[in-house]
Amino acid sequence: MPLPPPDPFLRIRARGANTAPDGRFEPYSRVRENDGWDLPEDERLARTEVSEEQPRSIINRVSSPDLGFDRTINPYRGCEHGCAYCYARPSHAYLGLSAGLDFETKIIAKPSAPTLLEREICRPSYRVAPIALGTDTDPYQPVEARYRIMRGILRVLSDWNHPLTIVTRGALIERDIDILGDMAVRNQVQVGISVTTLDADLARRLEPRAPAPARRLRMIGSLAKAGVPVRVMVAPVIPVLTEPDLERILEAARDAGASAASWILLRLPHDVADLFRDWLARNEPGRAGHVMNRLREMRGGKDYDAGFGVRMSGEGVHAELIAHRFDLAMRRLGLALKLPGLDCTAFAPPPRQGDQLSLF
Image 1 (cartoon, rainbow, N blue to C red):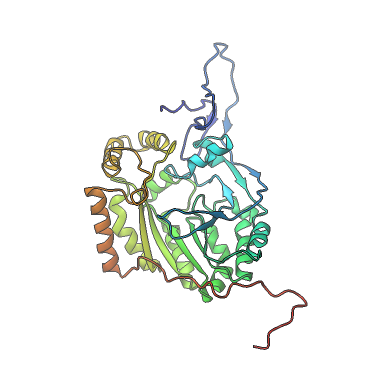
Image 2 (image 1 turned 180 degrees about the vertical axis):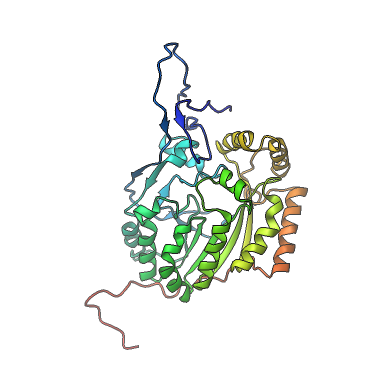
């Protein structure tokens, strides 16, 4: 489906998308037309707007066989990092918003998340298992500096000795190294840092408000120095565009302190396919056709295949070649495929004032 033209009076700066197509559940679409009056309009800047949501629960249950966890927490809806390829963009359609500019400019925060979390994990029926944070939108995107929701969540999980995993590319995670380092001593936390490319110019256009690649490598070093187990996630691997960086990313991350690694092939569900093709046309016109043709070779001739077992890695000769290159580099660099399991045995309510203390 062709995207609507950009708003001529909207100034867009450092955004992955440049238009706001209507959500896929909307019954009507809107197109700006010149009414012939030729009246001047004020140019306006596409600014980030944050609203608050008060959900009834905060732990989401998942059952995908492709994932190594069964529960997640998402402190925010939408993500200001504005990554052009983000597979989470279509989730904004459930709010009646666009997967394009709305996803990266209309952010919904959940400030009550720490309170809800403690309420849910203190129930007698709750059974502990690692909670994954950052599986949809980045919990350490810029708005976290103001809301500090992640720090509140970490305090609750640390107090209860509850294990967790974090996936991010946000430098704000270094603010919470005091809590993460303490939890790492108890084997209750692991962090995955996403590095898509080492090309700073490409990263700036592809992930306009995310930290630069060199900054993410320093994040890996800071976390590793604090004793936090770190996995580098080469994600997404974009054929032709970032694919050549695979081995160099793994080596740079290993040198920075990562002890494990993984990779995920570019995923373009629903609206993301049109938005990413538009990004290619604007930013990489000479390679756009090559990128999409190679991707379709690994997706059974389609832009995306959501089938379990293939959506993360694709299939066919080129997908097998990437997997083989990854395996060879992992063995050469001494990186693990998985980090050791987290400790769930210490989970317990934190001591309260007036509690009887144990003698042992």
